[in-house]
Length: 471
Image (cartoon, rainbow, N blue to C red; front, top):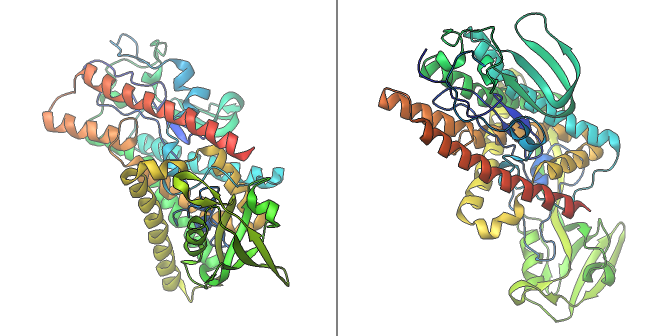
């Protein structure tokens, strides 16, 4: 056996939707466990395949800020994460940061109808299952022992054990995990000797790296498959801008509502500024409102076939800038173009994948380089489910984009070389390979524990934020 077993975490992975974060416990001395994040996206991106006007969520609530477009017997075990954190509600709170990295915002979404909500949860559960299957298949194809493959967490609803592996469907379909024999922190699984060459912990660096990275690969491939299906079934969405800025939501009792604004209004003019049919339409309105605190401001608004004249006096908000308690989004029309043959379908799929990946990367850069101003854009799984529910309610075709961009976000975020993420464990494996021997237990424990605790705090914070903003 190659040294002691790393009990860095309890299960290869608990993908908790609460943060979209998944805690795993790959007991691979070089570190293989980690919580993971599901990232998110702007509603404008997620509804890009719908035939309804696309709306970017929370573009200017109160601050009038435009949103970005965006168990081995006889082993010497290491520290093991408490079971409440490693598998169960605690794990669902880890890794939420990615959810907002691509711009999903935590307010303004309306989860109308149980069917739409169920569809959104189903999409997220499927994405997690795909990620877990990546780890599972990579291990099995290499002959590595696996003891459990579970979809969901909590008590099992259905379980089946035809051989070595127990397959189960659990009560809460917002997570999942793959477990290895060495994952039992009490060493209770005596079916395998500690020096069994087919235990994950006893495999070489390259083989462990394949298992760790397989989840990300699975999500990328699944995203491509979803986008390929999209372009062949509903076509590639092309956005055309129409004059005006859309008002998808208002602050209840706010200045705008008191002035007569209603959800669905289109602002054609604000002051002397005509809102043109271009991507700058939302910033134009935001700028006009910001620059008129405590001053009368006239709006020309289209409501159905009517054109109305409304007057407001923006209040002085943060920094003395004008605010009226309104959410703004671009006024757009979505057209779908069908591919002309297989080659065209592949080209369109690749282009759409690159566009969505760029959206996720841009969101990550914004959060990393301007956290103070971008932190309010972070959101957790509650907002993601709400966003997916709204998309499903408006047009189920939009779920293609919703599914694809969350897969891409999950894949990109997990490659970051940060503690508790797949990329962090891969970095530890690289260090092990460079040293030619295992890393010190204390080093691995310190790095991973700090990462897990940080994400736990972030996860709890974002879940609370999502809940409050959706009330």
